[in-house]
Every structure is written in structure tokens, then in C-alpha cells.
Image 1: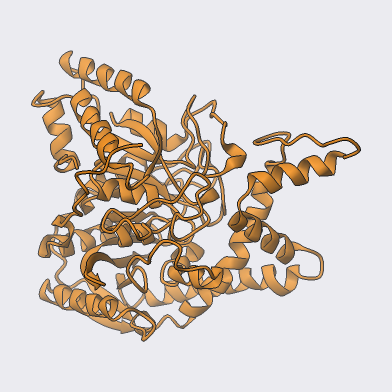
Image 2 (image 1 turned 60 degrees about the vertical axis):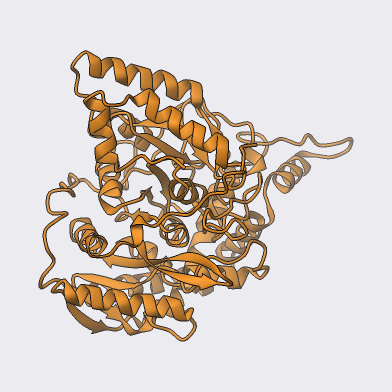
Length: 496
């Protein structure tokens, strides 16, 4: 496991030549080679391309050039964000051999900030899942206990940061796919306001829900990455046309007097006892920091899952229609006597896994004649109500506090019922439905059969409320030491 220190420290040491961008990259690649065989967080690494970029950064620093705030910092990328000339599989056989002709906007912005993107992390197929068990190339294992899931769908990114394979990584969050794995792996994960970060180059699951965000070991590190990738983009008409604020400026300002709302629906008997204990302990920590705890209600919490699993699959059904064996992806030619329909059916049947097929069928159903009004239109109406509910509650408080997940990481293969799996996102989906921002940060641990598993605290703030959100998270982090604890990797594990 590599000890990178903080991102700011690593970048400063690279700038002052205490180390080099090449050395930082090689430390990551060596750690992956020695330990990722047991975790399988990476789908691939682009070592040669990344080495060339790191060498170029070192030369620019030697010539006195300012290479940016992320100077030489290696960053992993979720495998549904395209990088030019490199594979982007989305965890699916249908894109097994696809290579992108262009970079996503977030990749270009990381490059502009001096970072070194160096590999693709595994994810649930087309970002559809809560455990990264649905990756066509194999599941990802949680570094805290390799018999358990890392969360999903950005489980590879969360596991890679938790294991120390990289200082930071990018993921995408459609219904909790950054925050949920951040919680289960004991790292920080940020879901920005919808439109705050460009989606150009993100292979879309649900375009009205998707948002790219960072993983890191600390709030400040994640904030540094968010600062680099946030902002308007001419390639994405849904990005917000106001400049991103300086999120670092007030990050360390005390939060005395900050109003923190505790929804009564978030302390539930269905939660693991350790989760409720963690939330109650966090409340006391915030009281000690001078924050005001406000009891609030979010009665639509329990309808979020149903709403999400109408809107998300409906959008997925439309988006994934392009993967037809002709324009994109895997092609299975029709046999003798077969026609074009058979090419579509065979290519999509072989290329898509069961969870993707399930969501495509569900989405097609709710959009079909006779069912559109009953399901999709009604889900959009509930979406407006959920958004209004958040707007109302944020009149009473500045930030919401609660658990990220109802339980710690579960064993791989232990949940066979899709509906049970969907409930893992109970506390995260509504932020995507409403378009607000959220963060998960380490806040405690649970004991599961003698194994120590991390628990995440979720904070949520209004749209464009990242400044307050990150400040509240950083002050909690400064008052606790949960983030300092790391998993012990098996020294005998070797790369594959």
C-alpha cells in the first residue's frame, strides 16, 4: 500500500523536486501490481501513456513552469469515462474492444491541472449496481474484507483509493454510485450539484441524474480534485453557466452556528444498529463544534427508490438503444435465414448482462403506450415533489446529516434479490432526483463477525451549496480520526 500523503503535499513535493511525477506514478503502479490481484479494482492501466505524461510534467517543472495545482498527482478513472485512444468498457462485454477517439471534459481538465490519469477502474455494467458485482469482467473486492463488496457502481474507484493504489479517483453518481462505495470503503466521495461538472465523455446511464465526482482519502483532497473539474462546458448544455466558487477558501472556517438538519426518517429501525450509533455520535460531534442540530422531516424518503427505478431505467432504455451491434459495440452476425432483428437481438443478448437487460426492459415498459402516464409521468410528478421537499427543508437548515447506507458492506453474492439490492441506495437516490449536492465521509466502524468495516456519514446541501457542504465535512473530519484508519492489505497478495 502506497503512502502518498495528501494530494496537496504530494503536488508540493513534486514541484520542489523532493520527488517526481514519475516516481509517484511508479509507486502507484507497483502497489497495484503487488496487491490488486486480491481486489481487482482496475480494469486496465495505461502505464506507457501515463509515464510519458509524468515525464513531460517533470520536464516542465524543471524548466520553471507552473504545471497546475495537481502537479504530477496520479488519478484513476472510472471505466465509463472516456479517454482518448484507450479502452472504455463500462464493465460490459458489448464495449469490450471499444477505444474512444476523444477525452472527456473532466480528463482534459485534470490534464490542465497537471494530474496524471493512469488507469480505468472497474464498475458495475453501465454503472447499474450497488456492489460492483455486475461487472462483466469480474467483481471488485473490498480492501477491508475481500469477501465483501466495495459498493457500487463506482466500486473500483473507491476500492483503489482505500487500498492506497492512488491518491484520488473519479467516479459517477446516478443514485449514490459515488457516495455508497465511499461509505463501504471508508473514503471520501463527493456527488456535486447536477450540472456543476461536465458529463461530456461520460457514457450515459440516466442523463438527468448522472454526475461525475471525486474520491479521495480526505475532504481537502477530494475538494482539490472537484475544484479542478468543476465549471461550465460548451460541450454539455446541462452544465451551470456560473463559475465554480473557490471551494478551498473557507474550507477550514469553523462552523459555529451552522444549522444541521437531522431527518427523523434517516434514523430507522431497518438500519444496522452500528449505523444509527454512528449517526448519533456524529450529531454529538457537531454539537461540540457549535453547530445547531435541527429536527426535520423528509417524508418522501421512502418513495425515492420507486421514483428512481422508473426514471433511471426509462432513460437507460433510451440511451442504450445505440448499442445495437451496428453503430457501437459487439456484433453477432445473423445466421442463415436470419434478418436484421436477429443481429440486434443476438448482439444485445450476448453483450448486455442480466442487470442491464432487466433495467432496459423495465424502462421500455414504463415508456410504452398505455403505461407512460401511469408510471413515467407520475414519477416525474413525484420528482418535482421531492425537489420541493428539499427546498422547503433547506429553509430550516443549511446541511442535512444522515447515514450514507443502511448497513456496512455485505458479502459478495449474498444478495440475490434485485429489490433488496436497490434498497442499499435508500438514502442516496433522492439527492440525484432533486439535483442537490452530497458527500460521504468516514465516520465510524462496525464489527461484522470479527471483521472491522467502515461506515460513512452523508451530508447533503442545496444546489450549488458545495462550499458549505465541504466546510461542514472538513470540520467533522478535523474533529475525528476515522479517515486516518486504513485497511491492512494481504502482503502475500500479488497482481494478476
